[in-house]
Image 1 (cartoon, rainbow, N blue to C red):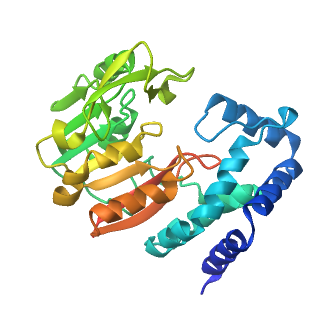
Image 2: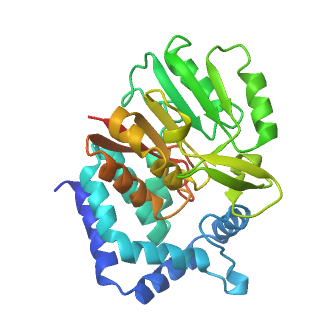
Length: 309
């Protein structure tokens, strides 16, 4: 084994051999030994973005750490499964950096894993060319990903682009930003595993608006298998924790079309292993890569590239 393999499997041995209580105690202690300004930044971040649980030392609230420890203890075998299926050592090094950050707040490994070479989602080493794409952008927001795609591959690289967003006013801005482009389909819908109605849960940061089972502003939810009938060749997902549900709703396209998948896997601790497991279960003809576009304190903006073999 090489150095990265040794470090990763040594970490898995720790998670295997510790009890949950021991692991929880170690992570708490590790958090309390990092600089206070880092503690403060992380506590504020988890208060603002509630995907991973709350963390407030003064109140004795360690829910974020409890959930993280539970995932590491219960699913170290799933992380090892993913590690074996990652196609390059940049991906393997990133997976180690994420899990070691969860465990000992390893900021250095995370910083080294940040990808500055290419635009978010559009890695030329993984996707060097695009032609006649039917591109589905879930969480299209104001069009930033579409514009990055066009800057990367050119305006003649697509056949059609479907832009989905759950927030009406954001979709209005999106339409203005992409007004000069042809063959853009705008969908004020939530991508799920079923057809129905869901509700908008607004965040102070509109890029983090989510869906909820209750609320005042209703949004239609659909499965992509029902909503798009033509062959899909590229899907990007950044939908604030709904990625797993949306993938279940695009199962037939994944089986039959084998589209390139660019999926955010950081909105839930378990998505890091659950999402590649689900893709693999539906179609084993995929290669897996991980890339990182976040910061060095906590691993967000982690993207799974699932690419047809």
